[in-house]
Amino acid sequence: MSPTPWRAVGLAAIATVTLAGCGESAANDSGDSDTLVFASIPSEESTSLQEAFQPVIDLLEEETGKTIEFQQATDYAAIIEGQRAGKIDIAQYGPFSYVLARNSGVKTTAVAAQVQQKGEEPGYQSYGVTAAGSPVQDLGDFRGKKTCFVDPGSTSGYLYPSAGLIEEGIDPDSDITPVMSGGHDASVLAVASGQCDVGFATDNMVEKQLIQKGQLKQGDVRTVWKSDVIAGSPIALSDDLAPELRERIATALGERANVDYLRANGFCEGDCRLGDSVWGFGAVDDAFYDGVRRVCDVTKDEQCTTS
Image 1 (cartoon, helix red, strand yellow):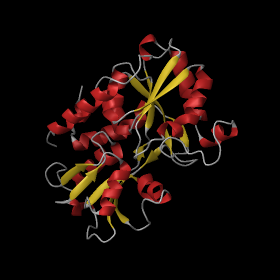
Image 2: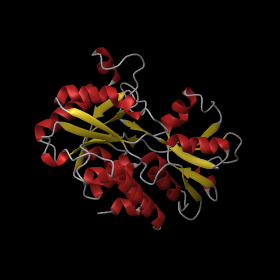
Image 3: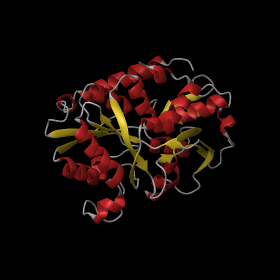
Image 4: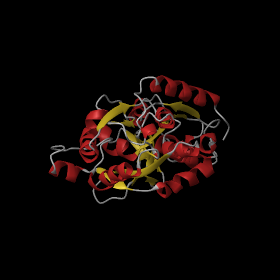
C-alpha cells in the first residue's frame, strides 16, 4: 500500500496539540506519584466519556489508593505519544493503535480488553455498510466509491477494512476515494445521509448504539461485509509503573471492571454501560493481539512497521 504523507503529518500535529494539555508524568516515577493518568478517545461524538468511565475510575482509585486523572484524547496518535512521553499511565487503545504503540517502541502492555456482552470473549467485528437503496452488494462493489473510514489508527474503522479491500484486489489508496470521518458514528451517518457511498465502523455502532440513540433507524443502512473477529480494544499499562501497582490495576480491570461487579458494589446504578457502551473488561495479554499483527502483514501499512 503506498504511503500517504498527509496522514502522518496530520496525526503528528494533532498529537502535539493534545499533549500540550497533559499533566506531569506519573509513569516516570514508577508509580510513586499520588496521581495516575487514564486516557481514552471516544468512538463517537461525545462529551460524556469520563462519565462513562467513572465507575472504572472509582474502582481503580479504591484499589490503588491513588487519584485517577482522566484525559479525553483527540485521536489514537495522541494516546501513543502520551504514553511514549510518560504522560499517560493507563491507556484505552484500539487494537491497531495498541500494536502501533508497541511497534514504535512505546513501553506499554495490554492487561484487559472490552467485553461487549457478559459471557462473550473480548472481541468484535468491523462492518462495511451502504445506504438502504444502494446497488452495492459486497466489498467488491466498493471500487470507485467514496468510502468513509474512521481514523488511520482505527482497527475496525481502517486496518481490517483495508485488509478486506486488498484481498478483493482493491487498493485502499487509489481504487476508492477514502474519507476519514473521525468517528464510528460519523462514518455510519455519512453513509446514511449520502455523504459517502459506503463506509466502515464497529459492529456495535451499526447494530445498536446509533439506533438506540435515535440517530439511525433500522434499515437506513445495509451491512454488506463483516470482518473476522477482532481482539477487543485493550487497556494497556505503562511498563514503568511499579510491578505491584501494575498487578493491582490489572487484577481490578480483568476481574472487577464489569457492570455486574460495579453495580453490586455501589460504583454505578441502572443500565451502567461502561466506556464505549460495553458490559466490562476481561483479562488479556500481548499475544492476544497477534491477529492484528497478521492483518498488518496483509495490508503492509507503513504504520505497522514504524519503529
